[in-house]
Length: 129
Image (cartoon, rainbow, N blue to C red):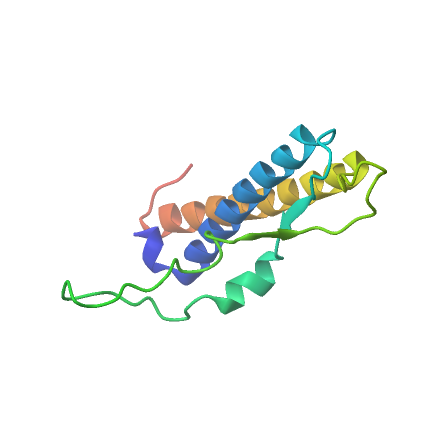
């Protein structure tokens, strides 16, 4: 039911983006001492979300080509840049902490939208709590 409401779909994609971003950040931190490792990050949600299809496409025959994931849930990691250390590693734990806080903020926004939508649905159905 919520999958058909665009606001809920966007909140779902934002939550998926935040989860994927946390995975990328955790990989960066795990490789903080790996020589030559390049820190990675995802594109901003707003940029990658606009690249997704605005209309949900569906296949009606096996010969049809399916559209990609709607929104940014399938975002690809890009080089985060940063100044390389003498061993060529570009991971900065401080930068990763900032990225992790930003990903947490994205997830909290998605959760708030879901909670508001659930409250509105319950109100529309005449239920409380």
